[in-house]
Length: 231
Figure (tube, one colour):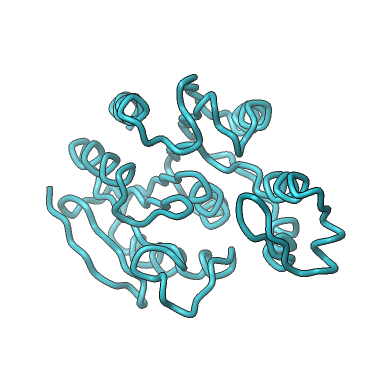
């Protein structure tokens, strides 16, 4: 498989596979990067089916950890728009892959664009609910966050500006999407993912032994089978 690394508007990008009119834009998850295991497995499968896969490092991840450029919805939207501008020059078909928070960011960026289909692994489909749950786990509230601007939680630090943006920019997703969800996911409840799937007319696959982070041999093997069946 051909692998080309380059920078677009300063954003580190990998293009997996030969040039194609059929492109799959991949958003990685939290604490991950553009060439992690789930992205590599995606690329290995997708390129065999005629796609070229583009993956990139989100702010504060991968090659961008030392940059003075925060992981905010606004910055991710700006970065992805640069990439989509380049993609739209060559692609006849653009699809979206998102893992965890990458699915949220992908939907935020692509919900009003011409996207053929989506593929989500352990997606965060309701970021507002997740942030409010993180506050709840710390016995805090959005009112506390508004007053203090930043609160440490057991999962990660949450900030008022980030939360406000999420609330003010709700997602409406109606693009045909295949979702793989772990039955032991501790960030998105089964009720939330089922409600989202029904509203978006998505095809939901539940792997009961899966966690939010698919990383064991068994979980990754199931993920590979899901890719083969759905891409």
